[in-house]
Image (tube, rainbow, N blue to C red; front, top):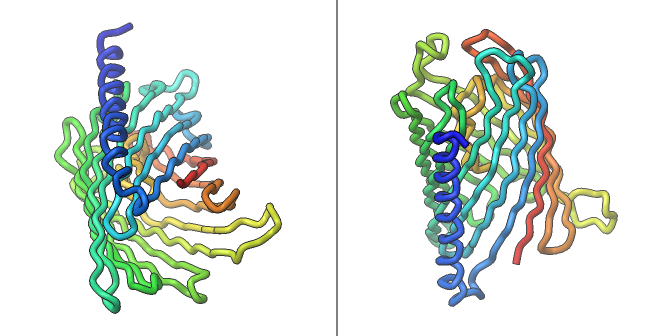
Length: 311
């Protein structure tokens, strides 16, 4: 085994042990007031196929997320995933990449009263290690924070997020994500719009860009409970326009450090209730990318499945 590869495996094991230790440490503390807490385990798998890329062939990701939540006080989320990007045969200046992703997220809730809604403050930490020896996608650290407000009837929502991403050899990237959400149709429909404003890019590597701007919009419909197994409980369709790169997605808990310039996309998510405490979700995504170094436009088609178990 090469020394550099062995070092990365040791680092991966170290961060994974921190996550396991955090779960062991937090669980007994929460257990003292278990009646006020709920727990969730979310195993997930993603497979993707690139179309039109001269370098990239396939994408895969396997992850596990554990969350503890107190609806009045706050919550804690810990996550780990393993990502792999496979290169096409004889690809120039691009090799297979194996990556380990680590996440810790804490939340604190504040009730403003019967008419003023609730404020939530969130702080995330992301750490990423991989074996990429060509680009500066390794040893990535991200600190992200978000302040959100939701009305008491849960029909209005707003948040402002900020992320500071550190890549080796580059100054920090700054991301701002203002968001608005609106409930419709007595709460059976939800419309949400989020803007991604990313600055601090190295303009010499991004075709003169020092910043990017993109807009994501999602519509979600909640179906009334059905007795037929094939009817979903939740349906979401989303669209992304504009450009974004090195994105920090606090909703889906990932950092797009391996991706080229994203130029928009479409996605569809379906969720079924297996029983009152178990859900399964199925997502299809179609995204457009551009390799700025090669002036190479390509697409990524993904399938994502997760199983949500509450107790």
